[in-house]
Image (cartoon, rainbow over all chains, first blue to last red; front, side, top):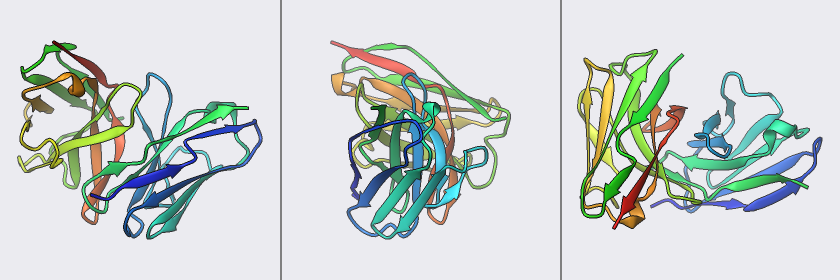
Length: 106
Length: 122
């Protein structure tokens, strides 16, 4: 199985900050990676697929990059609505998710 | 707008079979390139892919759950179904159905149901 490791597990930030979340795959997944945002009591929301393609309706302050085994999700100018947990998901072989990164208010 | 809604018992006894329904509206299950997927999230934990099925009936399951999982589809009702047998407390989770969009040989999930909490009691 391909393991997905996210870091950090928790991130404290302020409104207006730029934050970066890292996702590492245990083997190469090319660019078959998606990012999701989840808020308590709600299902995950797709933000980015194919490592860097922004889903329609997602603000442009979200950006994804990377390929192979190293990927990042960057949120520029963090907004109050962005405090949530973020997950990466590989779809190169079966489907596995990272453990999540909780972005909390500093 | 595509909408998915899970339904079923919120409480299942250990050793019995968990059965859930996902009703899809705003779009047809019979669409090329879409794979209807079950994913679960144990309390306070991350996400685990259970399996998917295509409208033709083709299925593909997580190897760790394969021996206990069955999915099916009723295209006339636009519904997909999940059965998980011999449940234990470890199967207590929020169960989601999601729409998978095929890219190359895998899917990302662009629409999700609200989720249903299923608790396994002893």
